[in-house]
Length: 82
Image 1 (cartoon, helix red, strand yellow):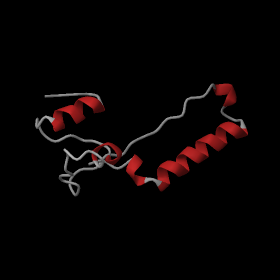
Image 2 (image 1 turned 135 degrees about the horizontal axis):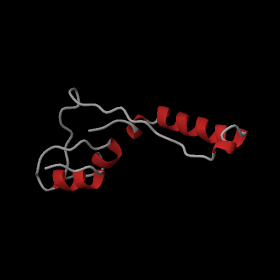
Image 3 (image 1 turned 180 degrees about the horizontal axis):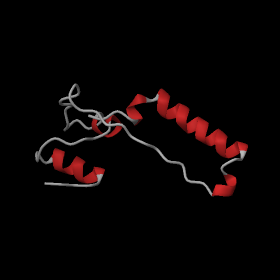
């Protein structure tokens, strides 16, 4: 089975169809799932911020970029996976 969206992975794992690469913020609160193979599996994620080209240099846009970067860096569960 193949799914290219996180909801499909979650539903497949919940129904016993195998293991799923889920972020911790989805897997940990779900009592029907257990963490497996953490030492063998990891995912690096890239986050993108979309802004009109003419606004990219504005201080407020840079501030949002820096804030979101800090939040993700300080919250490993946002990039960690099961």
